[in-house]
Length: 373
Image (cartoon, rainbow, N blue to C red; front, top):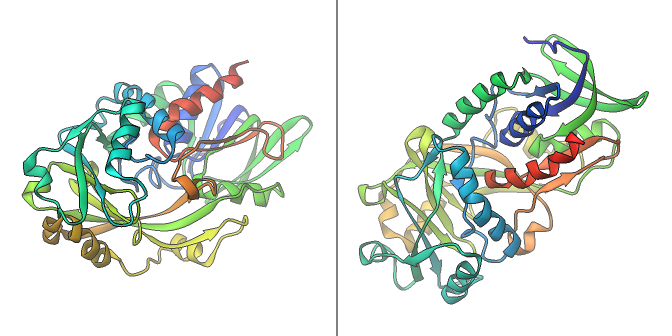
């Protein structure tokens, strides 16, 4: 068990996922003394790992200009910043389904041309894999994956170089103001301790409101889902492909580099339940945190997905990735993924940060520059 080495810090970052680590690094590189706290025994272990591992370039968001455009702008920056973590040895395709789609193929194409996201008709060998009665058009796109395990290793080295102090198995439980400074109570295996800070950054994703509620501060309207992505083997023709069928109750098949498998996720069957966040845990969240998982919905995902891509019938489930996914209520209408960066959340210099996609990080770090002043 590592205790904080100091009683006072310029900044304490609660949450050791990708966004928390990135903010801690940015602040340390500005010359500040930074403490990074993570409730788990390893960094980037939760939502940073349990996701589609997709490096977005805007294709996923044809109903949100801002989200798509920011992904398009940030894509090359992210690829350049993490070249050893980016996986691009596969072909990426997007298809528009005909029934119930919220965009048509011409609308999708015009949207991507407007934001500058490159796309071209998929070759016949690929288009022929899809059911023509259900798929309007298929495009070749430029989109990559990332290896979360390699990203963790890289960031751990950077944290050590930047002299960011890290405390694992450490949960931020209560924030308060005292004498013009913030105090933060940290719960560790051998009991609580307390540190002071000029700034606190709450980057705990699905746990954002836990700290606010326990500190008797106003909570942020959030929606949570218990999400399952099946980890599967795929038949040889699909092994070097990433495929997304949209825009509506459809599915994605993406390489998952840390396991050498693919994730299969489905808009209808990946969520096992949803709840509005009132600052207290829900029964579904409690069960998840206690290690209890509902029955997998892989068979439902597969049964529907193979109607559009018949070759998926040869997929075999190896495992599933489970996580609590958090979205802002405003995202329900247009499937946008705005950044949450809320300064002074009930206390001056207590800031809440949430980004839904890894490429959001550059926009978040731009916001963090105020701290250097």
